[in-house]
Length: 136
Image 1 (tube, one colour):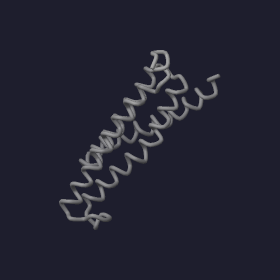
Image 2 (tube, helix red, strand yellow):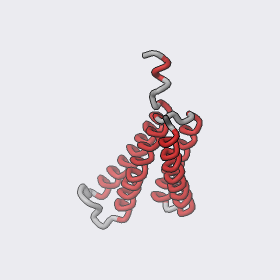
Image 3 (cartoon, helix red, strand yellow):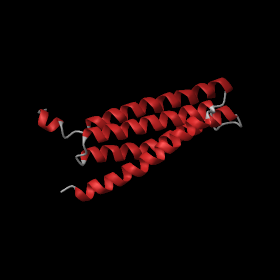
C-alpha cells in the first residue's frame, strides 16, 4: 500500500481503539474472576463486589462505543492527528480514572473520570458536527 493512501487510514484512532479493547478485556477478566470466586455464573447473586464489577465493565462499554466511533469518524473527516491524539488521551484517561475509582471506591477518581468522559463526549460530538459541515 502506498504511503499516500496510508495517511487516509484512521491510524491514530486505531491505537485508541486497541487501548480501549485492552481496558475492556481487563474489566471483563475482573468480572470473570469475581464470578469464579463467588461461584455465580448468571446475574450478580446479590454480591455487591460482582455488581460493581459488572457495572464498571458495562459503563465502559456504554461510553467507549460511541466515543470510539466518533473518534474514528473525526479522523476520517481529516482532523489533525494531534487533535485525534488529544481526544484519544482524554478518552482513555477518563475511562481508566472512572473504572479505577469505581472499582476501588475512590470517589474523587471516579468523579474525575466521569467529568472528563462527559466533557470529551460533548466536545468530540461538537467538533465532529462542525468538521462534517466544513468538510467539502
